[in-house]
Image (cartoon, rainbow, N blue to C red; front, top):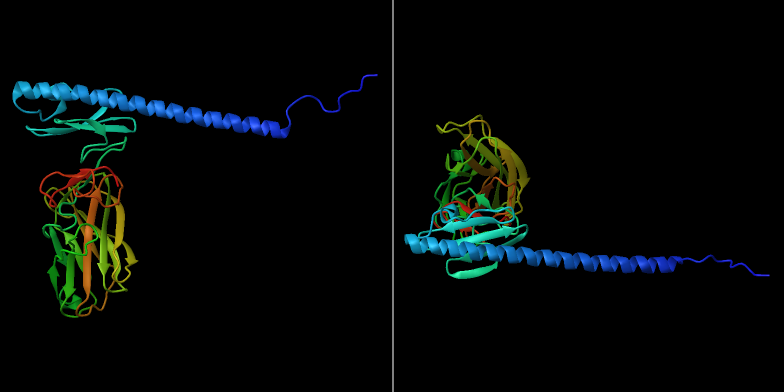
Amino acid sequence: MIQKNKHPDGFTIVELLIVIVIIGILAAITIVAYNGIQERARASSVSSALSQANRKLGTYNAENGSYPAALATAGVADSNDIKYEYSGTSSGYCLTATNGTTSYKTTESSSPAQGGCAGHGQGGVAAITNLMPNPSFETNTASWSYRWYGTAGGAGTNSRPTSGGLHGSAFLRKTWTTAGSAADNGFNSTSNQVAVTAGQTYAISGAMRTNRSDYGARIGLAWYDTGGVQIGTTTWYGSTTLSANTWRRLSQTATAPTGATSLVVIFSNGSAHAWAVGDTLDIDGVMVNNASNTNFADGNTTDWAWSGSLNNSISTGPPQ
């Protein structure tokens, strides 16, 4: 008589788990290898595209005695895979090419290298612009004024210390020389300083500091039309209390109303305070951009570039 096997043929739980683990490891290796192949393919395509663009720009320069103001003039254009950003002068240029999340850069005198030119986007992330000129007071206090009212708020001196800033070395400071209270004190950008587009949402931020522990800091936004007339009333956001002698970044997003062409940014306290002689109020690192990004950056930040005067113009670069 033949005895039947009490245990049918098949995998045990342990064996199945081992098989699953092996399949998972092989899948992970395959994905990593595939991603590596894709990355190398993208790197090869952008490097090749930049080399071709270099030749076209070089030919244009040889024929015209200068480099073009725009890529299209030299016959260089985006393709389905490659997107270009170009910063050029008559004597030189910097060119970034991006494929997916891979960016390479080149100049009139250098071979393609990984990364992006200053002021360009890279890695598939578009560049943003800090629309606030003179954002960290490294050169002067142009376009900014001090906001306080009458003798109730006390009197003070205005200065630009050149050490101790949160971003760079300098910052903007008010020091009280006469005690005061019951007034809204702070700083505001000059009227019509920041150009905006109606309907566009902007991120506004800045860092404040005071020696006081009872300062209720807040942001105020005033929108103006093309004639310099304020649209509605100033809108206030906040407030929050600052810790004594500690920089704190305030931020807010807001949409420019119909008819708005410019913006005034105000940083001030949210309630009355009994200011004493020797009290200080500081501001630094102001950022206004249309990318909902409140991390500060300007032309002194890595991979950023000024559009005009150093430390006194708008600046562009990748989000920080």
